[in-house]
Amino acid sequence: MKKFLLGAGIVSGGIFYFIIGILGLVIHLWTIAISFYYGGIFSAIIALSLPFIAEFFWFIKSWIMTETFFNTYTSSIAAYAVVSISILLVIGFLSSKMNDNAELDKEEPPLI
Figure 1 (tube, rainbow, N blue to C red):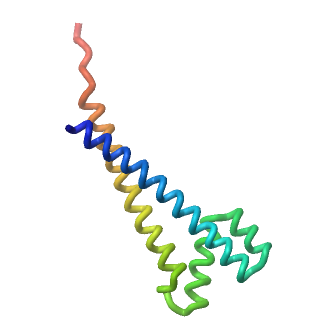
Figure 2: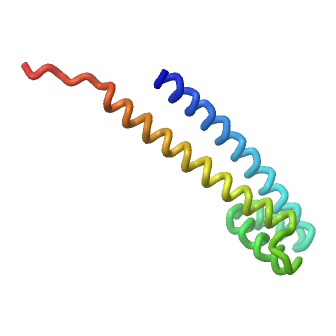
Figure 3: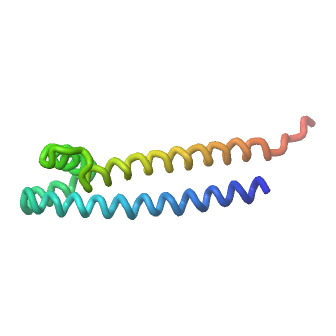
């Protein structure tokens, strides 16, 4: 039962990690579209080349331009960050449990 739960946790962690990647790609494409709309092709190329920096820049810029934190873009980035960090912490916790269980399952070598 322990191994089944561990395997289920690993599979669900992999699925969540895949979903995080797809959502990150969607947010990055959204950032490129915003930078192209407001800054032109050069800005879009920079956003394409520097994903985290561009997303942080347009997060702040969007917050300033709309004069509110709760616009669609900033709320999406904040929610993505919170969910991503939470899922990665859970995956890290499960993998540490897996390592702990693997060490407990090892047989001791004979002392002869």
